[in-house]
Image (cartoon, rainbow over all chains, first blue to last red; front, side):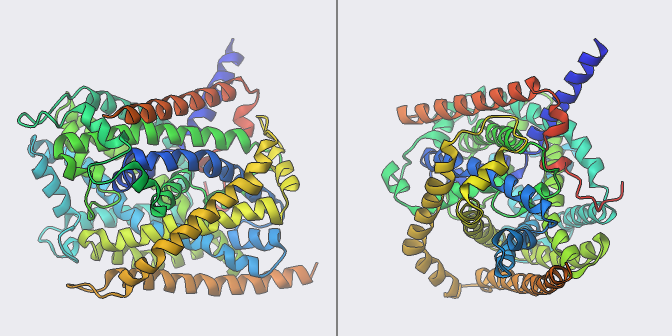
Length: 528
Length: 50
């Protein structure tokens, strides 16, 4: 009996670890922002298609490629690509797998600070003091994150948000530097299911709110769900949305972002696995857990709540901000719940913890590259990365007006470059390593059957989908994007151009490291 | 909320819930799952002090 209980305990532990790892800011904050920006239900059609034909297959391919690369002695993405392509130039493509997580880390820490400041606001009773005024909550959020002007976070008389940013940066740095992140991760195996339970309670409250604004009966729960799921909006039909390649690019990018595939994280972590560890059921369970948190909880809470309290303008608008919608909408829900102050604190504090575990993992690909490329230890690698990320985070926090720096880096990293690296990985799996060898690698240690149809999906359908969407987006929208970049803004500095400059400088730094790493690997191979 | 909105919502929510339920069942019914299954967060890079 005791043995049976122990067996159940370890299996439940495995479920909590695998599904809990999928929970993060991508589910509860980025997904609603993207869905709202690109048309609600019209966004969900490419999102579901992308999940089935590229997201899940790529997750499997990336776990298998990473574990295979690890067996060849590499943990960094450039090293893995060099081994698998058998070319020095492969390492330079892998540069993207270190650049993207570091660039995303720069703004992710800022959003972490928003979560922590909201947890504090609920604990201290500041949020309930705002009462049921949706406008006041919106103003509170925009004021505290400096949406109105560049440098606002630094220049306020009481730089509260700056204080939380510093706390988040120091917490991340100390945990990574001391190498004690495993402690917080074990804690999160319990904390993340608690976040899901908390989110389910919030969902029930959202669905039972009725029409919370007394003089606006149209702003009710059914119309709120409509704002999330209707395939045509007030200004766009379904066909207009689906014929826009940027909707497909953004939906696919969101799948990659929340599954943590396409930007080097999984490749790096899978490289530390044993050869016969399962990757098939693990990644499927993580993807399902992620999808549940995103579709059922992330999408059903934030957008309906934003619509019910702020109206249609709460879920549309150019300067909405990718991560902002939850911060404007959710406090209204908590303020109308029994024990809302406690739930509000718990929700944002647990979200902060989920974000910390994600941001800690974002630096691992670069740490692995610096260790392999320069032959230095973990602490030296973390020190170098801290200088780079401190500069980048300061840039994002300073240029906070309309979240221009954050949204620019987010778009080019989490929608554009993630697409390029994901496409390369699919081609690497199906065509360079070879689909038969790749599938044999995926099936090694698999706890579920991997059907042969996956060969067709991974070799033909997924690459064709990715190349078509990317080609169409480049043809129709890239010229417009470039024009917007080079056109100076009417007022203030050219933040978009400066953000791209920052990306280029960091990319140049990693290119130098990859070059040094290639020389070390040449020597190692010559001495064998 | 339109009919197409209801349809997409019901399909997406029931589809992902069914997939998650099946995965949880497979993990529970797989012998030795805690040794062979891994989440990104529980993988040890090997260069950390504990």
